[in-house]
Image (cartoon, rainbow, N blue to C red):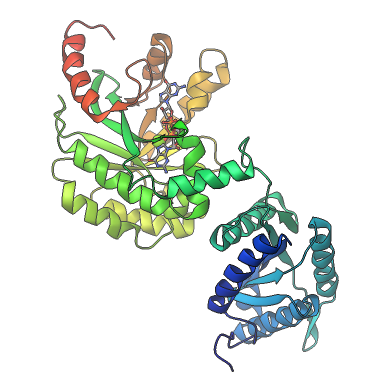
Length: 434
Ligand code: C2E
Ligand code: MG
Ligand code: MG
């Protein structure tokens, strides 16, 4: 075996692939001849190993490697990125139609099953495709685009998918610019946290606040987290941003004086980090530095927790550090009831859509009542966010929600304003304004 080669398949290994990709992306931009990156995953590979054994699994990987070599021309490259993930770099692709032909050739080759003793094994694959310079002009971003396209293809139940040309209504060059700017935003001091109070339902007393990230870009003005958080997730900055938010939120919260005792501070963690084994250590470090006298709450959206088996042990370890887990935007995912038995959580945060439609859609009240009942049986508290009027607040309290949050009480505000708000609030509660 030569250096840079994958031991099992003889294809290029991940490291060689990454340096090749770097070079080809630059060449594509310089020569203005597009290249395509295909990321290829074998579907259900774990089952093959489980049912037929690892030796068969290995033969299947080698079989796929050979088929990939049939698709490559002399100027192309095939590589194994790890486990059951492979990649093709196809250079000099004039347009997506050429790439489509290559993909169809691969599917045709794989339509013939692999012989394994008496049995025949099919090799179903899903392919994510991104092109340079159309989808990205940096190898790291291009790889992420292709991987994202693969995940999207999986979710859509199709065999291959190209990366989308635009993210929302932002065009590619603008998107590229956004990615570059976001990269240095922390260092340039452009990020901050806004805090939105959370109140205990009965006495309507503030018990803590949720930290919401804000990005002020000198050229764009305020950019919504709904825009930049998905970008940060895609380009690999989300961990850095989350660690920054965790430390900043705890540091600022350690200076608050809440009427009801030690304040809680909630931070949002994306689901993709919930399966990272070092997340508990990062939380532990932040708690050691700033956690004195503060209750940390980690909010994680229900829909991002689909890989529960991988996420639950990580969340358990975070709970063991004394932090609480809140399931954000609850009701929009697809949790089954058995999920409740094992869910390592302390709070369910009902999705804002149910709260907003409570006044007009009677079924929302039924759903909320059901969630509250179920949550309480499992010793979870229920939070409701997005409360904008007194009638909704009263309905939610009558339905048994424990924690309330929304513009009715306060909009997200800078840390210094929260301290002032708490003072004003004390007077307001005394005179029963809200
Ligand atoms: P989320 O965690 O569900 O946060 C609640 C969102 O609802 C916030 O939007 C908040 O400003 C808004 N909101 C609160 N009360 C009301 C209300 O009464 N009416 C209306 N219409 N909206 C209300 P924001 O700050 O724009 O954040 C949007 C989303 O971006 C968050 O949803 C969260 O998913 C994500 N996000 C924000 N900060 C972070 C962060 O630090 N890390 C991560 N990973 N995601 C974040
Ligand atoms: Mg949240
Ligand atoms: Mg939410």
